[in-house]
Length: 368
Image 1 (cartoon, rainbow, N blue to C red):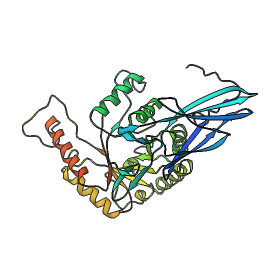
Image 2: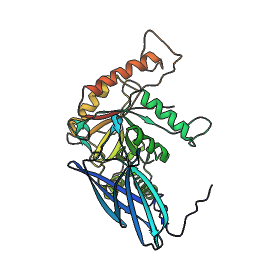
Image 3: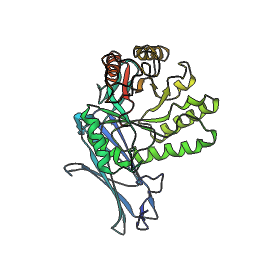
Image 4: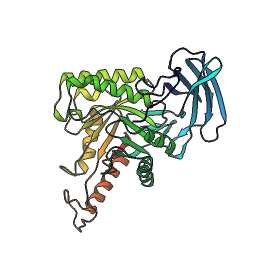
């Protein structure tokens, strides 16, 4: 590992691995309110924040203090894939009028809304999310992808027309969130609390959530904090339920600007109390692949929506495996042909398009 050298007065990057700079951005009418909080190790004289436009470098505003608030009147909005405009905050700590340390992060001005009847909204307009789930691993390199590999992945995601990505099932490389900001992709960010609730691991889940939020809450692209994925696959318990209540409250206390989310296995009963814990919910459905018919995905989603009419709902996983070399004139479920996969995706797109209450749909999985 390469050691990091910093002066005695430096931004506290040991605070959950963050940059020592927290940026909260909220829209209030036509204005953006930017709340800044810096943490510095050792004594210092002052902290200066300078806000600039990311691409042009044009100065926008300045502020001072450990905590500061800046109001931008009618800012240039971060507007998804159409116009992912970014600003940059550069924070400098001074001692005896000399700059001792500096950190810099990008942010965007935008508003998100999840409506239980009308779906997802970006900056006040309907913006249905169509995206993919993505794992960051490759043959031969495992989890140690280079920036060029990440860029290749996201070039393919953009080429297929996605406007959202579910980063499953863990925190990804920090560079990935930067890419999503610059490309305008809406992000579902998630911690690795997966498939089995382990009572002795609750502290670990808490730490993972704190690190995810403190390291990445400045990113314009992130729309929600996901608490778990298919966590009831190995059973349901009161302890599991209470752990989710705790994580939900923790996420909302750390970042009140974003909702919490949970992706549920399709085996989870539709009357489960777990569905009421997060702000928004998703189901991972594979009717038409592992069992049943593709049309049953829509029937299942309609049933969940009827039982939880106030809860924004998404299809957080769907898909059918295929080998490109396997072709047939008579596709059927389970045959792994390209024809069946294409027919399956067509059926699922029709389900998503015909149900405006669904705020998003994510193909499983973009890369395998």
